[in-house]
Length: 239
Ligand SMILES: *Cc1c(COP(=O)(O)O)cnc(C)c1O
Image (cartoon, rainbow, N blue to C red; front, side):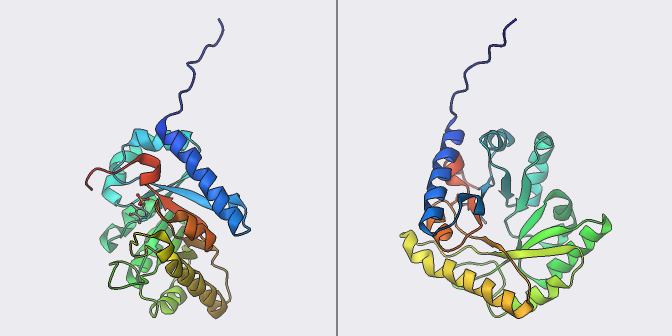
């Protein structure tokens, strides 16, 4: 019998991803970068497991979840997928152990006590965790992250921790109606990273910055990971 699969209709998630990839590639080209230098992290908070699977089938290989508990609910339905799983939301230190087992990356490390807990937990299974430090660039506008002045000491502490690999920085800039107004924040995160590399004599290649409405600007300013939710999955219902 001949195999006769149903023609695959282009789901809206798959076509959204395709459009985003094109925009990412154009933004990379504008700044003389290759498209492969930027990873699309699908921000999948509030999305059901089926939507995550659809995005995976559309080629996404990194996902960012905001809450440990929400992810524990969805994860059993997705164990056959092998992307990298990122925690991009604020992490309470009493959930550090669970988070270290559920995620490959913790993108929102903002203090040394939390980092120590993650290091301990990763050490218990002889593993290591990739981490980013979340930097708060505008204390009046955003609530989470380490201050710019606190950043060097936190980075110094984390690079001493045997089970954490500090890969770079992450930020959530204030929301600006015109995404071009966000550019100085992205540029500042890159400079902070450059300063840290000089200060510690190591490389921290990752800059996680840019969301649905400003990812092109972020890529022009050096983002290596963009976290995109709405533009892939559509508007979220209330969180
Ligand atoms: C929700 C979320 C995003 C994605 O936001 P969109 O505007 O939907 O693209 C990115 N980063 C973090 C930390 C988020 O919580």
